[in-house]
Length: 291
Image (tube, rainbow, N blue to C red):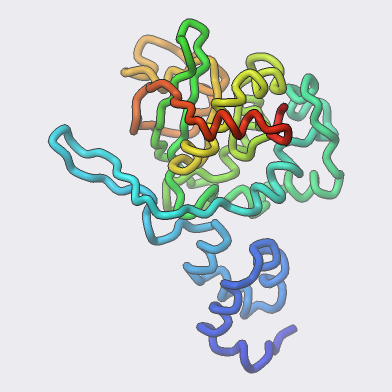
């Protein structure tokens, strides 16, 4: 189709219409209508943000000067999670077993179903657009690390802001992309749980840990995913130490992933994970994942 309908000749009108289009249709179908449409979608900052390929203009956090130096202040605006994660990448790829046994060998001990061959081929393409996608709009590049240390009375959580090199994705920002998480999953550094954007390190069967930390999973969803792009449960992380990696090597598989991810700066240091009553009530319901 080389001649689009006359009503779509005005770029502003077409952009406004496309902004109301469902993300999967916009990503896979609208770009193939004609060269003109594809060019508008690729060059429009608003459409690229709607596709989670570029960050929204409004920041989720901003640096705020204080007596003790610069601190990060949360804007308290409602963030939007990339819907493609919940409906596509998480259930159809991250939590699926690949056909080649050597890929994701860690999945052998988990009860993950086998992936559809067609979807596997599409997701594994090096140039697949999902790899360049942001996790939220606006993004934060903050990760919450919940350490399950056996000698502590309860898990502790730290919040870390990562500065990522996105040269491989041809992006001029330093936000975490889905491709970074995909690399962590493929290498076995991150194990995707039942709850979207909750990961675990390799320390026992996933189902047992999810049941054991049901209350803390509820907290991670209700509190920490509000400000962070993802939450990682691990036994211990060197990134949460006062002076990370000074005199110590990587302690866990998660540390391997975080070190590859980039430079990290602690926003909030270790604190006990506070479990609210509504979190306790929610994780006791029969339909709560993992029960």
